[in-house]
Length: 457
Image 1 (cartoon, rainbow, N blue to C red):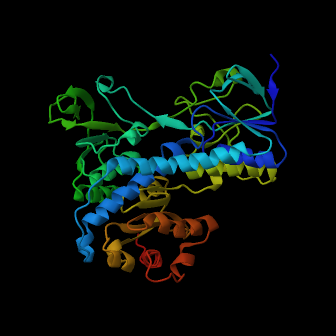
Image 2: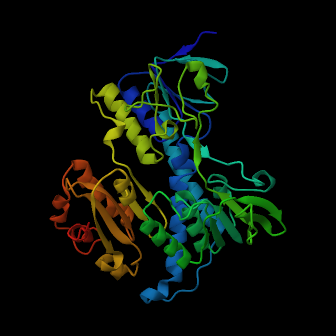
Image 3: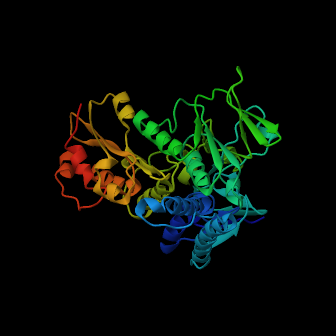
């Protein structure tokens, strides 16, 4: 069988893949984009877009219930969950359709549906056809982990993909995993009217954050009636007449949380186990993440790994940045690197958490001498005027260099305001540049200079 030759093959049409294909095709190269399921990857189909559409619906319900706080009298909201779910799904369909149209009309690009497997370092097979290219880019993403916990296979459980198929509000949703994905769904379904319990193995929620951030997040969620069970050292599952009994211990018998539905949100794994990496000689770590250098290159010449599958970032924006790094090096003679980017992300509960750089805990663990500025959102005029004063602004500064090391803004518009700090960090400017910059009033950002003017050891 004669192999079909391309200049480049992109396996996976997630966030990075289509944009890279477009750059390569615009440079006159022939490109095959191979996708086994849905164009758009996690973000478009089962991640950011549908979940944030659901978050928006949940916030609308929450605001309606609180309307009297602003002097507006409206009837209690009624959740039309089929319509809520249909709206979120339509957001996905629109985005996916636009991507498919873009790829389908791209000169020099062929969109091929099917599962790709390596048959050599620069050859793959898909649908019984062999394809070759001197450049291959892996953009295969990841999926939810279902760990081997006692009884987990004896009961029905949801993950981040299947929970999106619900068109009715659960009576009681038990969320196993108190981190970013789990907490967004927990608050969302609580606002839709479900009873919600969060079960977390650790001593606090979102354990990678500073303790004061974790504590404030827990306070926000518990304030909305979400039950939080921490230190669940042995999580078990068992059938129950009312659904599923989720236990928190294997050595003693506290009351189990009985849910009509259970959502597992305990981590993700890369979609690399069925690619035939060993046939191509591509190295991966023990968890299946493909090993790459600072420019997304694998150990095999002419093969790159971009996006979630390389373990160097787990976000849509880091995946897109991987594409930018690869394109800059290949096409622009610009040696951009993964290590140039500053970590940033959000937790999209309401109010949201915006984060960038190091936490205070991580900075101290790295041996930094730090100064910390912190101000409550009750000091932010915008928050007071909107009646949403939960949370705080926190900035960590290197006491020796005056560089901003990191920040957390938990509060109204914190996911947007964090970029004020991120941009100053990216510019390499000292904190004084921002502390002396006049911000517009009334905004959330205007309290950032004040926070920086109050640094303490």
